[in-house]
Image (cartoon, rainbow, N blue to C red):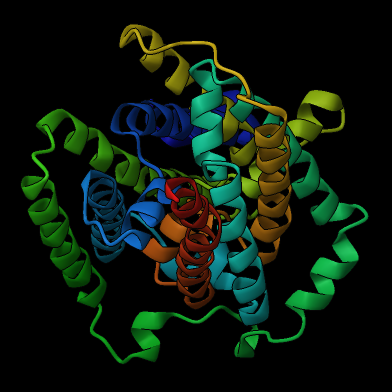
Length: 355
């Protein structure tokens, strides 16, 4: 059965939902088994270490770039028509929102995607923090926090009515993105070898990047057969978390689409992966102070992710894989915000405790 037949049988909305679930399950399994986490990589790098967490993050990112750029060259992904490329981006939003998200992911001990994966493995701290993240993201999308988000985002917008294609802006050839991804993958494998990371973890780390490319390819295919225009998109957790929350609260008025299937798919994939690996375990907050810190960080990520145009996955990996200018700026801000926060907060506490 080809895709057109599936669309005619299920309808465009249910087909998009199914694609989101498939992408989410792939992501959830791979992320749970590889322990992929931008926050962990940021902390490791901030402490002048090039360990396993940095290696896994670099491998995930480079794999996404390689798969997406290769699929783009072969015509399987319409990169110029991707949602993040086809609309104006906000430089000011990427900077301010990216820094806020970076601070938040250190405080919450995980980015939004990592919190979702951990929640599926029985981590109640991550579950509660993830719910706060989703509520604040919804408030920022269309509630009380929408006005300040719009004001900050409007201060510096990309010109021409579109985001900036970094490959075009830097006058690089069409294969430049693929070449960059391959070089980054080699660097990731060198670091992985020095840290003696097992093949299984590397495969699953690469699987996270593959899930991002899968989402791009599936929605591209749907956009080509859909009667109404359908956005080309992939894994991200800020907007989808808010959309999923609203779907659960009022499913009668919700629109079936890719993001609504993504979040449950990730949860399902990570849950069964943790159960099969015998890693499912209920965990909670260690203390009241830890709860305050985690919930504050989740709120910062909810607002910051919406302002930045995506979370550590949405802007950092998904947007980065298509070389969207504001996504790369947001990714840089994630790293800076995370490293500075770790230095001022966790490293400082560690130094004081040693005295």
